[in-house]
Amino acid sequence: MKLIQSVKRRMGPGNESDRAKGAKPAAEAAPKAGAAPAKAAGAEASRARRAGGDDNPFGGMPTLREAPVTERPQLFQKKLQACSIVYDFNAATHVKEKESKRQTLLEIVEYVNNTRNCFNEGMMQDVVAMVSANIFRTLPPVHKNPNALFDNEEDEPPLETAWPHLQIVYEFFLRFVVSNDVDPKIAKRFIDHAFMLKLLDLFDSEDPRERDYLKTILHRIYGKFMVLRSFIRKAIQNLFFKIIYESDTHNGIAELLEILGSIINGFALPVKEEHQVMLEKSLIPLHKVRTLNSFHQQLAYCMAQYAEKDPRLAPMIIQGTLRLWPVTNTPKEVLFLNEIEEILELTQPPEFVKIQERLFKRIARCIMSPHFQVAERVLFLWNNDYIVKLINSNRVVLFPIVVGALYKNSKNHWNSTVHGLTYNVLKLLMEADPTLFDECSAKHRDSSNQETTEDEDRKKKWEKLAAVYQTKTGKSAPGMPTLATST
Image: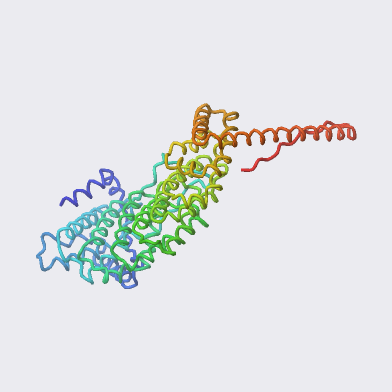
């Protein structure tokens, strides 16, 4: 009874208006979750409509609580078949039938919650058929601005109009999946590959309530149906390939990454080649998706789980991130720096040596970034004791890379906060190794003087060329072009 009350509470008062909208019944055959369940669902739904005609198909059945104990299984099966009738919530018709179906769905949820051994093989087929008929549908097209770099999180997502029924169907299916009465060896005949592919397609729903249920159900299926585990991982990986190389947008990436984070946490050591391929080919390339900010937290968690499981994978993650580093998108650059710090905290010294030079050349460019958030975020790396320890252990290689960038920042950057952080980092480097710091400072001065000399020589040459041009054409020469700097 508590379960039913909780479901009703979660549906909220807004569902009364949803129910008032109504819709005509559309006895849609269940999509294939297995050929037999799908055909059975369609046949039963059609029979239920023909038997009821224009009358309420739920009106002639007693409640499960009132029926004799011996007749309850058969009545439960009939109610499942009747619930396969799907109503269109975009039309204001058949309000009474919709409310009757909602009450029937609540009733069967209560029944399975309080009854043991209610799922035999025949019943499993009807359960999967009913669930398939209700949840598998064509999702409406997603209307988003393809040129938007980030999603507008303040916009309210469009909600599913059929949620008064869908929520209870998802709640019922979740109870079915976690039930001890459901034997995975039997249920796998109905919850098969085709069913799982259609379930994954639903993750593109714009309704966050539906995606939350799907996330919980998929995670439970992965834990219970061991025979489906490899297929689920490959199906998610293929979905990521489609997002990376084709569509570039998807509503359910964050939820799928949450599931993967839990899956990665359970990987055995050493990490299998198959899992390393998934990291390299599908997870790391997700960093280049335009809507990264909507799922970066979950993606960074997956990266951290891999690095924690096997620190030898940290160089692959960092190198992949550097390869996809954003050039003009500064908010995305800050996200990358957050992730780099998290991975560095899990990187062992031998692995750090492999990527230190390439990584700190990128860090030096970020230090000199004119965008204050990027420069500020990268300078905060020196607040991390473990990272400072890694830097000091390899200071002979790293100090010459960053000292020049820090000096240029201290002279040229416009932001006062960045100035203060820059002087603090210079002080830390000087205290760590005064001799090496002085050598790096001297080299930077020599390099700066050489650049100044080269600029003056270049200016003189340009002035000579401009004079020759003016003598021959009688026109003023254009200004001296600036040299492009590497990024």
